[in-house]
Image (cartoon, rainbow, N blue to C red; front, top):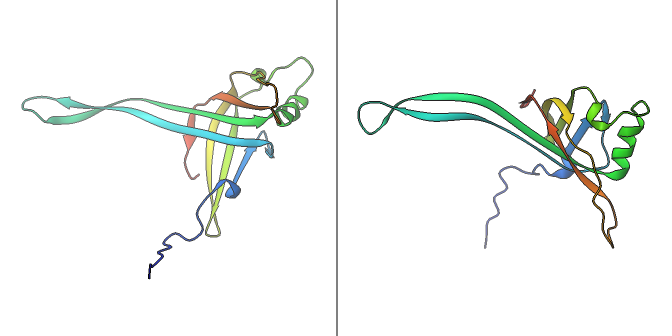
Length: 141
């Protein structure tokens, strides 16, 4: 008889994620991507092994994939003639619920870098990956 080990219980999935953009929870979202990195390299001196480690720049990147209807809703918040790329920097809050606790990441100082449409025959919906320029990510803030 097989023994099932369920160490973590109910796992975090898309249905436990909430994304807030420009002060409202976004419903027409199908994906959120964000990550950060810091340049690091070993420094060598005498011998074959590193004697220390140097650090370089920090970099963060992010994108959100939105339904066309959600993009229109954001555009309707703007004054006439303004583009998504004209919106002042804003934070995106991503919340995860896990074991009755909320964990919150903040994607800081986001700006849209593009807008557009790609739709083809037999598409049922129009989705657009919106690339963002960001300053940094606050993990579990």
